[in-house]
Image (cartoon, rainbow, N blue to C red; front, side, top):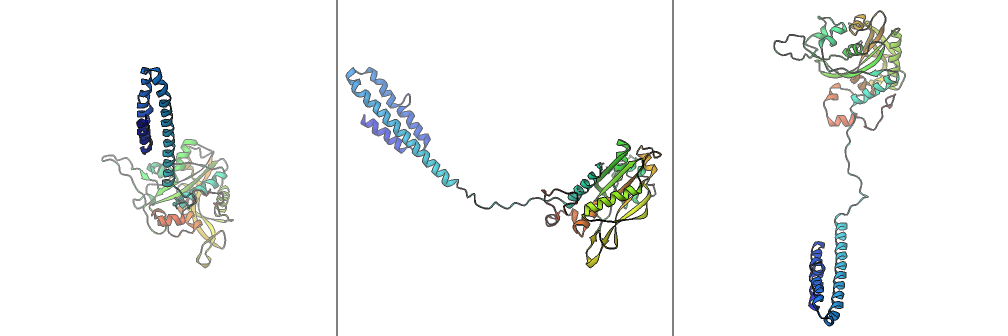
Length: 354
Ligand code: PHE
């Protein structure tokens, strides 16, 4: 009995992890363990022998069981101490710096413009960047010989060999969205259409891809006066200061009469300030929608009339945020994007957050 006791207590003391300890338990006091087998042998003993061996075996079993429990909790404590040591973490350390991306000025300004026009009841319309030459030119009353159709300005898509239908174009302005919207929705309507446009041009103020926002309002009694009011409301909200506009007679095939619109500004001390002074800066083209354009849009020009305008988004972004070179907008230079970009959490306000 003493040998048995010494043997198992030694094995228990030597078990260095919980799996080994469990193995010891099974071999000692498990169903077929050595101690259990000895207890089964009691049945074959004489009553005297049993009376002497039974309590001793029971006591031994109890001793082994409590030695197992003590050893198990010692091992658990050691394991926990080891984890606490290894997985230690200083929650008071400052967080690691992570750069957040930023909102591109074009996206920011598009949001601002959309918010301001939405407040005046304009919905947002969209059209494809690859456009049919009918939507981009013919429907807008742009004749075959017009200079903007020349290869110089327009990017033409390739047609398959032997296919001599007129090629599609990368839209040169957002005006084809007027046509698509009128054909789909009829009159009356009040929309803006922001988006990408393409012209073959490249210098400090021109890039082959840039952004415009089109405006179109058609109803029974819409006039140039409404156009002027809407634009002055827009610029005043956008620049966050009262901005006067100047309309200069101009020509576009798709509007009659047509006007180029300037906004009031000053150039004092070499820096440009919108909404003050006696200078003028051209920012958009506009006019009353030409009857032929209404007709191409499926609208009866005897009953309906309206105004339209087209404005460069990149250009008004440069003006508001003091960005000198248009080409940098599309260079994807991270330093530029971090400098001129906007926080993703800054909600555009009606006054553009000025
Ligand atoms: N589509 C013209 C341009 O790209 C702008 C414009 C739009 C002018 C609507 C008048 C009316 O220059």
